[in-house]
Length: 101
Image (cartoon, rainbow, N blue to C red; front, side, top):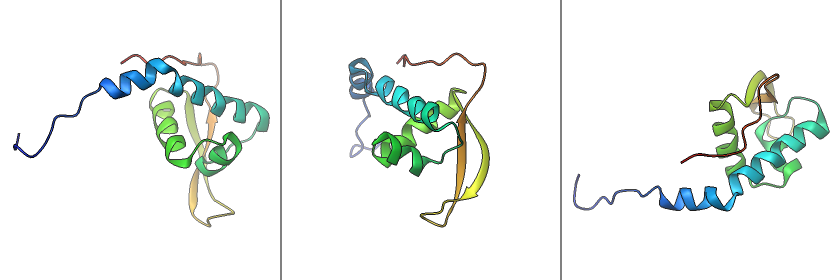
């Protein structure tokens, strides 16, 4: 490893996870889906949950990888005019809130 690059520690991420922020934010995202009952894109989730869009994107990425959410379609976002993935919680799957690091 070149001398000007520093190794990245996972400790800050583990500290955040222990504080419960990812878990609380996942719950807020699920609450948005429960209230709306329709597919939503990341921008919509951010607005409805009042979670910053950059955080929403990270949470959604993890939730997709964990099988908690699925992409059900792609539609033009009426605000941005860009194609956006429409998401829904997966059915029949237990909702995992804990993050094991």
